[in-house]
Every structure is written in C-alpha cells, then in structure tokens.
Length: 134
Image (cartoon, rainbow, N blue to C red; front, side):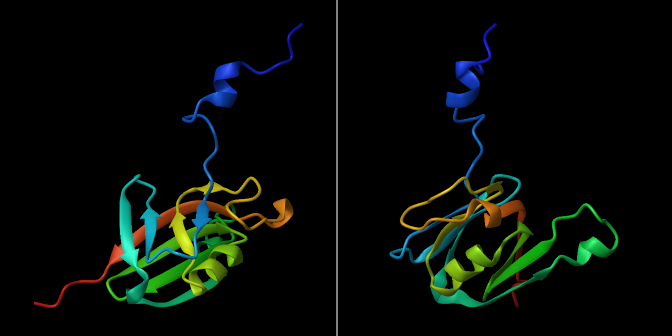
C-alpha cells in the first residue's frame, strides 16, 4: 500500500499554499494582492498609519477571522482580515513589508523566523481607494 501523496500535489506551485507576506528592508512600495488577484503598488512615502484590532464582523459572524489590520495611505486603505496580524503590522511600521496577500506563513521568510504557533494567517485582503476631489 502506497501512503505517499501524489508527486503533483506537493510540487505543483498552483496547489502549494502561499505565504501571506514578505519583507525586504530595501522596498519603497507595498505590493497589495487583493482577493481578486489584482496587484497594487502603494508607495511608503504615502503611508499615514496602521491600526490592528478585533474584527468587528465577529459580533454577527462567530466564524469570521478574529483580527483586522487597516493600513492607511493617503490615497487608499488596505484592510486585512486574519489572525496573528501583529507580525505584518510590525513590518509596516518599519517600512519593510514587501507584499501582502491571502495565505499563511509556513516558517521563515527572508531573514526573519516566525513562530508557527503565532504565524500570521491572512483570510482576506481588500483595498478601498479614496475619492478624488474634482
């Protein structure tokens, strides 16, 4: 009896779980990959502030992701829903966050190591652009 998983499931990049974020101390912009798989580059020069807290949807939907991280730029707000989002918030504070997308962290990314028990999980990434003033 063969208990090994099929080769294609473990090696196919389409079937592998994605890391939810990456860091790089040399980046000038954050690459936001939304749930619709659209990518947006937001310059750190336009970063205003970030806030992490409980997800307000928990009151109505108990199975909702427990945390919400909002990253405010002058032209848009990035909303991230998930768990253990403090790691991502700390990377934003240092202007080190290279990208964020739906997924989870399996271990070390780049030079940092993340404790698996407290690894970030991103359930949703959305972006809301500010209205332009005529």
